[in-house]
Image 1 (cartoon, rainbow, N blue to C red):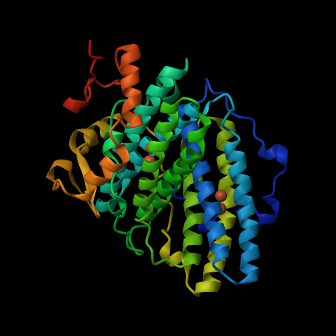
Image 2: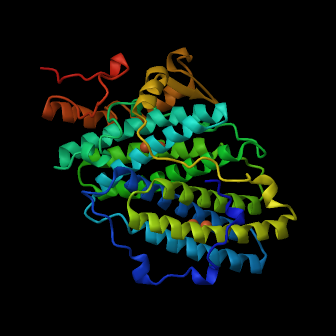
Image 3: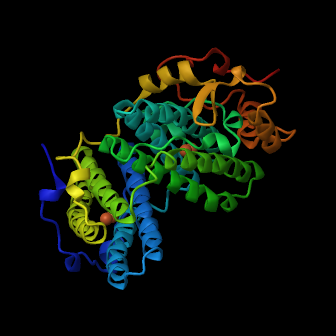
Length: 406
Ligand SMILES: [Fe+2]
Ligand SMILES: [Fe+2]
Ligand SMILES: [Fe+2]
Ligand SMILES: [Fe+2]
């Protein structure tokens, strides 16, 4: 199944424009959709959003009018792709239900990437971030349980456990300590694509929470989104800092189009909804042409051969799969880590005067952080917190279930 998008023939750009009814796709049925179909839709929406934002940045940084027009044309198609993908999410799914999908994406996509990442340092970064999004899923699931008849277990389809990760109130680090070492430009192309994919996914989550926090009435819900949105800023800082900073704009354009090809091709392999699968295939055929054009731009602008920086074929497809055992293993060994500059180390090994503690105290204040308050409220009202532990008790003693104090 070797596939090289550089050797395929895509759809000519002038044939890629679609009308409103083609873009306004009928949404999936929220009760029968496979949770990983929802995850793939959320992930591809994030990939398209990144390609659009990147396209805007590129055109603001070049004076070449022909190039600016060419970028505007491709960007319009990326917008159409985003519209078609985004339309698949039904309006019956509330903001909070969609949020559960976002965090399931963060858990299972990051866990997949961590397990297939060739670079040891990047893998550490993914493992580290994984436990934080895993915790967000648990916090939001508790809010959902208190406010809606629909449970998070149904949304994640028992494929992802819901239980504490690195508790969110401990995730708040000084900004200096979220900046990671960049990957080498000539490193494994798979590492670059992983970093691009996770950065795009986290960026989309950051944007979503930034804009959704004020859509709730309950102060605890508004607080929860506010607090977790700041962690997503930390995650975008972490993953974005992995990207090699010494690439040209044209190289980054090629990398974006290549990664879009990789992601649509990957998701086509495992999609069991035939209508959604057909959309992935159509968009792959669009991306092949975007990639061809990006390669032409790179040859012209940089005078360099794009094929020299790309693999001969796409790597193994990115896959949404259940990663319960892997997540438990990382939880058991890394829940107590924090970061000091670019490295990870146990919280209790830090000097008490280290900026981590000052920052954490400054943002958490004297009352429980919203991510703690929601659990306290759930324990008070229901006697315990909401969890979905399908593989036995929590692997970390101090995070095992507690009952409300009598
Ligand atoms: Fe695209
Ligand atoms: Fe998250
Ligand atoms: Fe995140
Ligand atoms: Fe594209």
